[in-house]
Amino acid sequence: MRFLDKVVIVTGAAGGMGKAAVKRFLDEGAHVVALDLYPKGIPETADHFYPLAVDVTNEEKVKQVFQEIRNQFGKIDALVNFVGIAQQAEPIEQVSLNKWMKILNTNVTSLFLLCKEAVQIMKDTRNKGAIVNVASISVVRPRPGLQSYIASKGAVVSFSQALALELAPYQIRVNVIHPGPCDTDMLGEFAALGSDVNVVKEEIFKKSIPLGELIQPEDVASTALYLCSDEAHMITGSVIHVDGGRGI
Image (cartoon, rainbow, N blue to C red; front, side):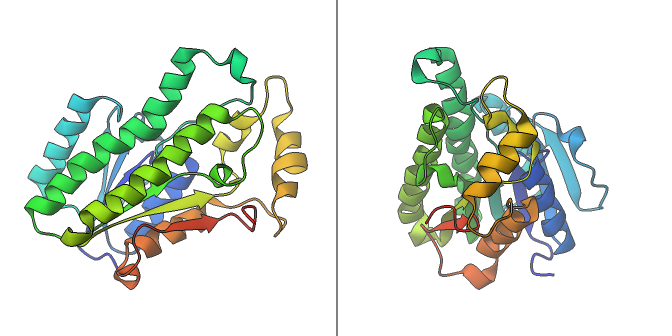
């Protein structure tokens, strides 16, 4: 019970990796606040489970939900950001400005808004804290046609490492996870239009992993759990690859 009585916020909580993280933190005794646009997709009924609906790209909505969290719990111990969207593989000349902005807003601006509010509460309560932002192994091993998505995830790394230095004097740690191809519904969204998703998963993504298996959501959730725990109290500004060797 490493997180007994600790307050952990998980964003993108209705996605594959988010659901796995919610379960792991609940199993370890945490009060888990699960943020998602549609949190009803999270099948948890534990006493310490608090699903909240929020558009994490809307500044006022994010402020409101964090005020609710402050009022109910008075503190935040950890923030884990799984929120993000994929990009269907396509040439840059087919990517509209609206699509580019949607990817950047969802994958990067949301983290700015979420971290900003969480950090304020952590500082106000003089509470040590941990933030984990989820990027992608594609930052170091790009694939063709995903230029907008990869740009957004590269920004996640730079933002997180800058924040790690800024917050170190407050004992607030910030780290990044680079998942490799993970066996979730989102993985199929990277396939080019008209592709057979199952074939893409087997013939492209799975074969790109040296260990020969797709990453499971639980693999990423376990890493997030460790990075938020006291066992990782001297780890900040790090980028952890959970990729089966894909980034080598």
